[in-house]
Length: 147
Image (cartoon, rainbow, N blue to C red):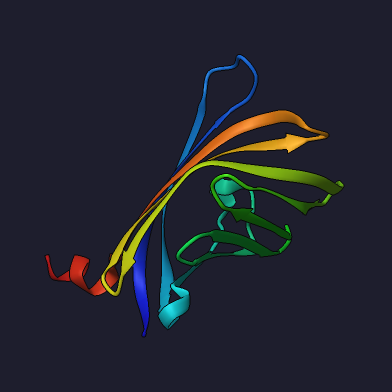
């Protein structure tokens, strides 16, 4: 199953003692059923996120979620509660080595859409560089058009 979906993303980032910054995006994407492995959700980033020209993919498996970005910005982040994952984060200014410490993760997807929630911290040299949260709603495009 490969379906057109509407994806609503609310991302919140907190750095140090600054007030949280929230970015909301509604975009079109694809939801692919990968059988036992879970689901894959893809969409093109826009100018609004500052990642224009980048394809974002969430690979949702039963015990972890992997975020892949390919294009102008390349990165891979693995979210798995209770585990710290290290990765490289490419930017136009150079690459950074970061670790992702997932605090909470929940994914409830089926062939009609669903929700993904991820709460995590980004660490650079074992120091927290920011606390982040994603809340993603996925809905069938056809079902929305029929309303």
